[in-house]
Length: 467
Image 1 (cartoon, rainbow, N blue to C red):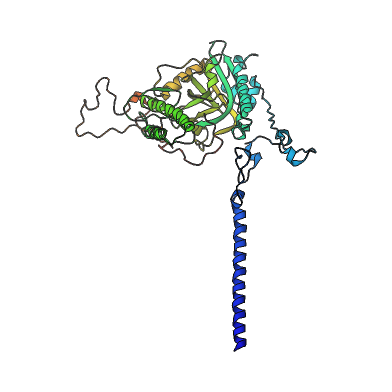
Image 2: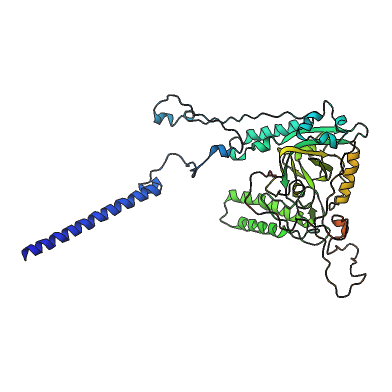
């Protein structure tokens, strides 16, 4: 009996010891986990640091070479003997990263032979081109363009994410100011790549929006007074953003710095709402237009929205107009309509031509005012006349087709001659024929364009857009 009791007590003691040991092990494991996953400040008694702020923590993997977006990266680490760590920690020059960006500024093409290296068909397409080029044909706009690029590199060198990519730095082959000797017709010739502009909207011609890709703007520099009461397809969204900004500004909890940001945003949004209510614009998906840097509008021979122009790629010549003004540090941009004509795979995110093989010939001081909805036949006729004034072309100009669906008339119970008439001064509920592209036949041609066809995919870095 005594032995049984002793054996029972031993078992109880072993059980208690085992439970205590398990509790200790579990507590130790919990502390290890906490130390591994939680910040160090949580584990001990907080000790105030002498510095007022803590630098942001960079998490995840950071590939510096990829951050440079095409810039060749050479990196080295140099070391020298120093004092003790406590001393060197307080010396600013003891731990330094020196950033040095070496950029070769390109020289412009100056002769027909140099132009032909990029576009071999150019001398054949324009027989009079050689007579328009002289020793001083290089426009000061070329040097101004690269001066602007270099200045922005210097300003943004501390922000690697804002640096121009290799593609956007070397995006212009030349800028030549030309004049045909017989007619004295002036022209500005650029050789560049082609990026895509999908901006613009016009409810008078197309009631539905064509999409809103990254950096989309519903307005273009080329604009005219609205002809109907149809609301802009992007007006409601802009008004909603304005209301959200005004509501946040009115909150008592909004701090002063945020209020300053909102005040500027509200002013911009109110201006945009007013503009969308009053004007119509070109549509990137349907209208053939190109974009010029803002500096070109202040050049020796200013280029303005509405000026006629030619886009030359391969053995084709496309008549277009200058429709928008972009940033001063980038060249080579055209509407999505032109991009799709050059390359069917083009989208708001995918440029049609990455190489510097597109030639733009702009005819300054040819814009016709007042502006109105683009007329493709008129664009073709004027560009054809201007082409003859620089010696003519060896191939016919491309003829654009209307891709905007014809307005469907509202059904009426008893049609009469007065049913389609509109009192003088009253906007017509549907666009008139003079407010859209002229058609060669009553039926609209087949087209791949449909409202909302622009992709809403993730943004690719290849598109260059106006900040």
